[in-house]
Image 1 (tube, rainbow, N blue to C red):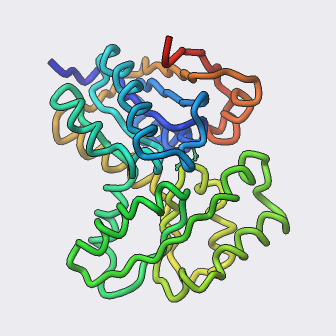
Image 2 (tube, rainbow, N blue to C red):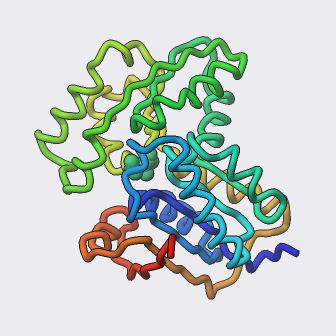
Amino acid sequence: MTKASDPIGIFDSGIGGLTVAKAVKQLLPGESIIYFGDTAHLPYGDKSTAAIQAYSIKICDIFLQRNCKVILIACNSASAAATELVKEYVGKRAKVFNVIEPVVNYIRETYHKTNIGLIGTKQTVGSGVYETKIEGLGNELKLHSLATPLLVPMIEEGFLQGTISQDIINEYLKKPVIHKISALILGCTHYPLIKEQVGNYYNGKVEVIDSSALVAASLRAYLEYNLLLNNSNNSSYNFMVSDFTESFEELTKLFFGEQVHLEKYKLWE
Ligand code: DGL
């Protein structure tokens, strides 16, 4: 029997998904969170669908053993590659959220007869999941997407402000494939950190959509509606990784806003 006090499991290929965990913590301060970063297998953005599916199921087992009421796939690449399988596998044992559906719902409510852009990893863009969902809304929308693989290492190396990062971002955004759009979806865990720089390129003429706040809001709505919201003031946070290095731990500061301790958990014996 699911209880409001049960934790929320959030997973990503690595540390970047902490942008989503941070948004969840801000909007749902009473919830306990178990975070899993699959640092032994990152980046997911260049992996096959089958590999990402296998890792995702293994991670779900950890969350199910710990009675998570919700499993949130914070990684865009895993959301694209593994959501359907994860939902099937988890069944009624937990509610599965990803980072794509709340964005698609927002687009449905906000846009009609226009072009929407997407940037993300090769896996996310290549999966075609956003196209299928957004063009299938019946709002006469067309999705234009571009893989921007250089942005993840750039952000992880701390190149956020300044001309080097702005030039790389501009080079990508000026590609004709994503011209004439009304909104751009930041389809990757890391991109909330460069939202401002992306906004600079468009100068306010294009809405830049960061999924983390939308995901947290839809999670809150679900918990409230199902009487599963935890209003406690003793929430706990656990952060696990499948491979530990000090630099992963340092990176938590960038993505979560504070440095947290990472506990190593072997995904495969
Ligand atoms: N977390 C991934 C995503 O959101 C980016 C990093 C990676 O490729 O693993 O797609």
